[in-house]
Image (cartoon, rainbow, N blue to C red; front, side):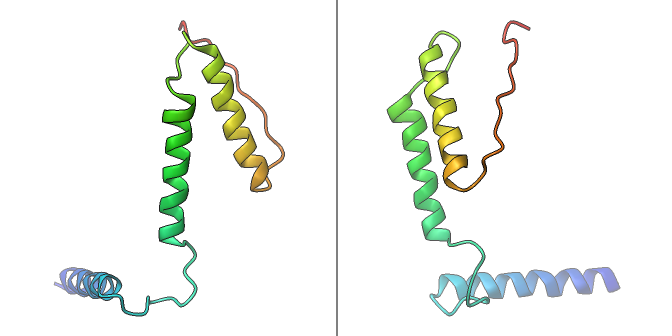
Length: 93
């Protein structure tokens, strides 16, 4: 009984937060950790770069694998991660 009451209150709280978010009300936190609209745009940009600009990535197109590795390394360096290394693997099994 106690467990179901807590679960009910948690679900109610989440629904109220979701409704407030979608109604354009002030978010629960004034400074959210994640800027959702900016994150969406960044993900779209990454997706475009990897799928449209670079294109197919397979062992038949090693140049695209190199471009992909360079893109990912560049991104990590841009956000301050400098201790990067590649992990080789045998794709043949």
